[in-house]
Length: 386
Image (cartoon, rainbow, N blue to C red; front, side):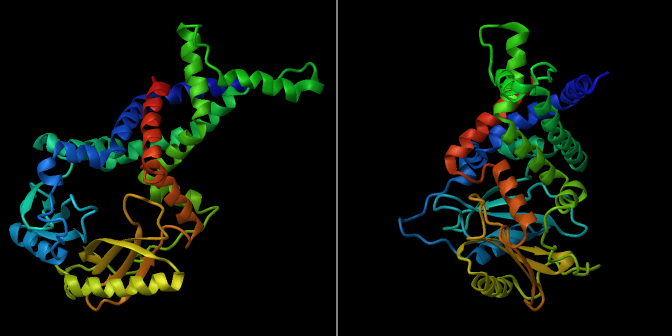
């Protein structure tokens, strides 16, 4: 069997293996582009708040964290927002269960930032709680088929196959070489290949279906490759993506990689939440001055007990993600000493490329226009798969 025939068979059967998964990924991805808007539409009682007056200021996020902490005695609040994304949004807090406590029925809590009222909560992604969890469940389907680690590996392998199949599929669109008229072969090649970009709309039946798949794949090839390889980054980062990309590009080291894991971690940061935040903010300001960066927003703050570390997450001029910041500063949760930092771009080429890939994947760049393109692309993936 000739090489071309072998690749046709490979492309066919790899495509059949991937098709069902890509249909799920395309449909859920088209919805996730509008995650916040759809979630707010489904859950207005939690996700839409009105400031009492035009000039109302949100309360201290740390006072609100303490209120949530007191309201859920079986849980710890180890992740918090520092400010609502806009004047009509709540603050979110995520809970983690205390040792020997029963399983949580709520782990995401919504709080009115002006009144301090706890608006409600949900066990993120648990569809048994009803439509309130629809969009988180769609996210779980998109990332892991809602199967946890096993599903993440499945989707990661599919994304890896998809990446390789992009090159096989592109090669198969090239017209087979002809021996005669070698002098005009380059011109004839482009003339013949041009047919692969066209769709015979009037042909009907198999020919039109074939053209939709071949021409659709060619016109979308660059995006298909971006989404396939970024899918590997989002699912198999440590085992596949970073080692492979690291052969060509450098990466920042994990700031907590050399921090020892604590056998009996403190349930709350010993330094305290607010003092820890101020220490992290000072280190962030020093970092941005040193790198000549601008701080646009201080967004989230989290505690990692087993590493005894606090993490301040901000949006700076190093960020390209328009949805949330990915500039991070880590400090010791006992004395506020700097443990390290992470910059999404400008620090290491591998991280810069990865940031752009993943931001394109989740439609967090390019504004509404690119989000519409990504929605259409998700539907196109379904068409190519079918």
